[in-house]
Length: 133
Length: 165
Image 1 (cartoon, rainbow over the protein chains, first blue to last red):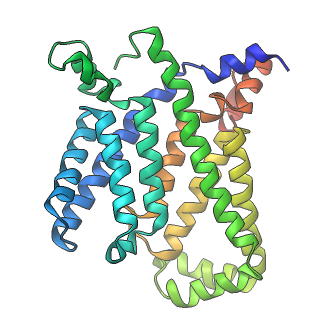
Image 2: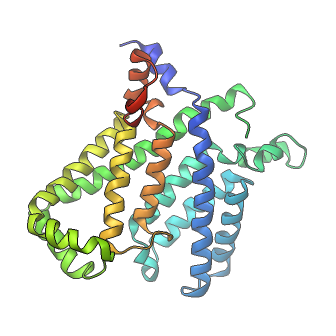
């Protein structure tokens, strides 16, 4: 087996694949928005959780500080897994949130069609915080 | 929409879709394993249809459940179990990953129709359909999967082969 072939495949730029991360990012933003509305209505949660749901949702939809938002998505999944009265979502839903959070974090999904593209190329964000984009 | 602007970002893209692919594959593997270790998954299916999903299916789908699925539970239990196992293998190793993604979409769509789940919700099956769509569209097996070798050896797939990898 040709090792260079494997190497190329591992580093395959596949920008076409990356464009589909935009779909994942926006949909997971809408997913959090649904949860924010649902949590606010039927299952009240502490203010910090509601704030995380709303900020995570908006950040993912607009692609702003996406890595931070992806970490919030991942953290919210862990939080909700341990909530008995919110278990009707089912454990697989939270697996989806965790997996998506991980993918969006590694893929820095906001750089494709999101505000992070602007953040990275301007002085709005200090250099030390650019890893959040 | 612009792509990555420097060389370091190119290394982000390859592993990203592979993470999603393998993670999804592991989800299907655990689901299949859970069914295989049971004494009879057909009995579990019968229980699900008669208790959890009783009369919940979409109206147009009910005749299919009553006339085809319930009389052949053993067959459908095997189809679901080994279907999930095949999807898991396809996604984890990136072998015919687009075909595996289509199968995953088909399987979860049937779960939604049988359980009467809402299409626009944060339902598990809806989530799996979304992620599978992204894996299909992104040809996920070409990033770190066997499909990448197939493309290398045989060139980009043409016509109907694009549904496979």
